[in-house]
Length: 77
Image (tube, rainbow, N blue to C red; front, side, top):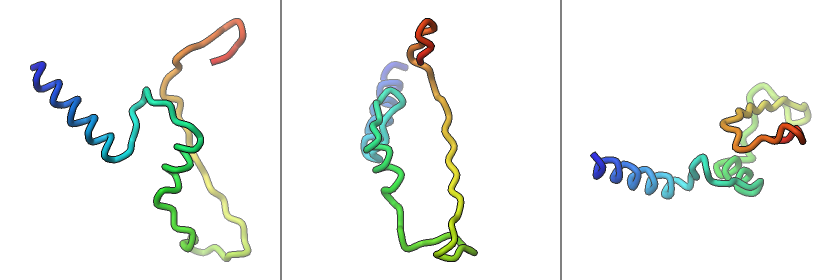
C-alpha cells in the first residue's frame, strides 16, 4: 500500500514538473500567471464576427480555492 502511494506521488510530481504546472501549495507570482495565460496565445487570431476597429468583451472567472489565514480583528484574509 505504501509503495503504491509513494509511486503515485512520484508519478504525479514528475507529471506536474514536466507540464510546468505547480501544485496548490506553490506560490504563483503575477509573472507566472501571465506566462501561463499567454504561453499558447496567438495574436493573429481574432474572434468571429468582430471587426478590428470594434471593441469586444472578454470575460474571466476566478474561484477562491482555500483560505490559509484570516485575521478577524484587522478584517484581512
